[in-house]
Length: 157
Image (tube, rainbow, N blue to C red; front, side, top):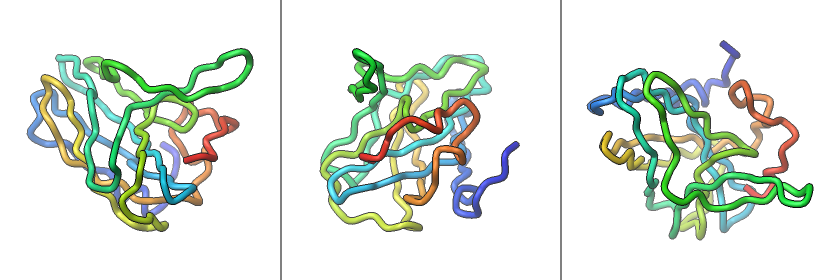
């Protein structure tokens, strides 16, 4: 396991009470400008039932969407994910910079390093769960979980 910053380690929150017994690890948020931000995390589903992340809510933004990056004509572009992000049984999903992530649009307050932001994950048939993410604007992609693209340009978040 890679070493984590103290702030990242503090964000390891179990999602108790869900039928699938999901856990969220290493939840953090970046905000490179006063209007938008993005949240990243690992969602583990050790259970036997698949779950679906269908929406995220928080009072920190006017609108929150699930986004991904896709290559179009040699350029990586962000787009909204329709329908949600599958979290298969017995596996994990990594929401990363340059990949699937939670996009915060129309921030309702400024976000500084170290701030904590509460989110509610809508996990479809698996219920809803509160998660807290720490703002970490100095974190580079090399601190993300394995498989993240350290060269992906996510500077707008």
